[in-house]
Length: 114
Length: 113
Image (cartoon, rainbow over all chains, first blue to last red; front, side, top):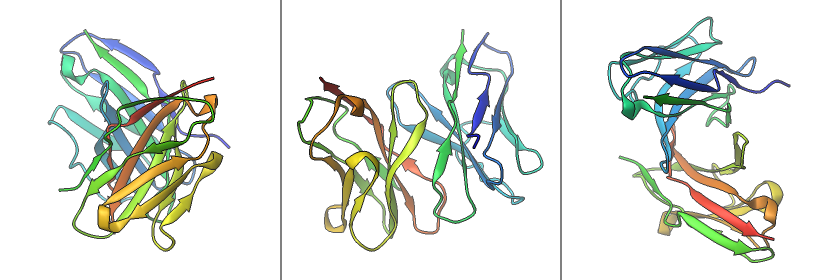
């Protein structure tokens, strides 16, 4: 079946602009995660959605970062007033209904802020 | 706070060599442990996981890992590596009851044919 998809695959933006990154999880998966992976670093947790519950935003690095998940499916990560340090690969993962979750990752969006 | 340490950042082996990648963690409670792999140009995928029970877990492609609670370790092993094992390997943990994982920085493995 279809896996997790993310768009765009690459995004180059100018410092100060806003960007939106999209994630389409596996159909039926109730959990959705966003991570950031910088060069040579591990995955940094950003935000976690579980069903209709309030998201866990504890990993968002600043108030410039926000995310939504509409209808329990597609999610959008928005970065406002981008900075050069926001340059990274942004990964989305979805998981099933039993925990602890096995996460299925998307291909990521490579964001470059110039 | 929980953390995961992968001490080997880069490992280079020849085919048929044995592999052991270190993973140590810090967490004051029961943990679930994972190894993920990212092959060149591919998505991150789960290699194996430990939740409870037998501390020696087997994953895909001949990999295994052993949870040693006294050493806070979950090292990944493979007796004979192949060129196709060239990839980035990430160790991760969640605290029991938590769904927020902490990942290590990853180990880059290069296997020469």
